[in-house]
Length: 232
Image 1 (tube, rainbow, N blue to C red):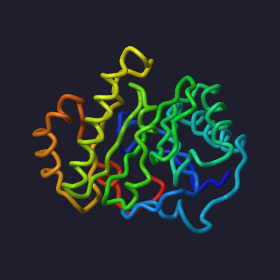
Image 2: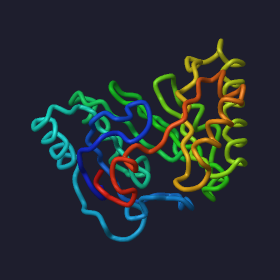
Image 3: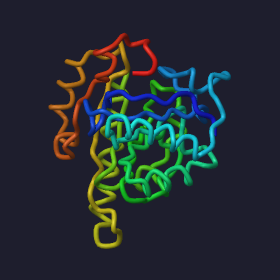
């Protein structure tokens, strides 16, 4: 598989924000989001070919060195890689706790011990909203994350509509499906667009977001380090 970088840092967002983790960034993506902050992992040749065993060994080395068991598999879009199922199985068997960051175009079909998904819903300002599918976010369970990166008030309204639809579907199908509880909901700003205050004021005024326990977040790593820095 094409691997852009493997490094240890802290989780910059989501339910493990601030905790140490090993990041495995795979190269290649099936989307081209307007605000993408990791285009080096989407286009070009900034990667090396590694086998599943080599990736696992690199991550194991960090655990041997510092005891870290958390792994974040990111990209690009990691779920488009042919060997990703094998990699996820190896991580699970080795006892790693894996956060799979995915862009919402691929259903979350691997359900293994220690794995959870952080799935984006790409709103209009990303330029990729038309690629989103409700049936994919419907695969998220109560340990997973549904994330909206917003750059306009139109994006906020879209996020509210999606959460409302997902919540209504869960309520209606509670007796027919094993997936009845909502995933964790996070709202994150496009860097440099809407202000934090604008988003928070909107969120606390939204009944849908309040009832579904939506959380505001910022990208912590862009505050700790230079927003353009890689490997953090």
